Image (cartoon, rainbow, N blue to C red; front, top):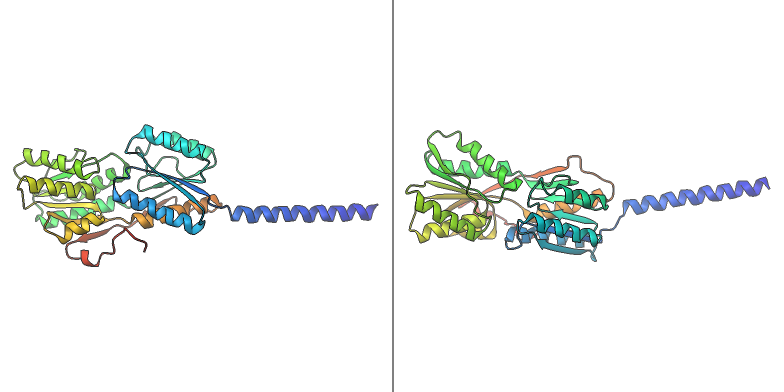
Length: 317
């Protein structure tokens, strides 16, 4: 009787150990089945590249992974609904480019309470498991340092602002820090929203050039706005203005290689950013948290002098 009991105990212990081992193996190998992605605007090639980068990484982790990408169009209510839809669809991970970094928090918390890993991409999102973004303060700094140098440290300058997400606010702050060091520079405007788009940049620039007879330099918060601003200057026959921006987009490569007022862009790498975000999210799903939940990527300044050797961001590297 005692022997039987002992044998049973050994078997039970073995079964229990096997159970733990299987559990351990399962925990270390939680499969990524689906990702939901919500970004500012799928009309912007930058965000399209983020989606493509995330999808490529997800398929690398699991060829059958389902990736659903939607455009929030900088509308917070729309983004709340999109996150609710992702929760209902039981996605494993959400990549979010927050329309409002603070106000999005209830939606982020709701997703995490449902067991979904949330990674903020390009801009911060309160309550997210991790954030992967460009060092946007630095991007604004290097872009405006170049502009200041180009205009000889003096003259009228405009900061063409954009949607008030953390990335844009950081870029503008970085630029302001640089401009503040040049007493010969006068900032004519810094609060107009160019909407992050080519059309928005064009409309805003038309307004500036109508109001201000003399403009030496313009810093735009992203490349679509820079391209739009250049078009406005052409239409109004204004020259001698130095335009700089942030993104390093394909459009800006073309602008830097042709006869435009655009002189530089602090490049980001949305492909690498998205790939990093999916990997970090996958690691968190499997119990491996990053040492620092804020992962910053260093921007590079692309100018007319080095654009020919710039690798660009529309493909894997």
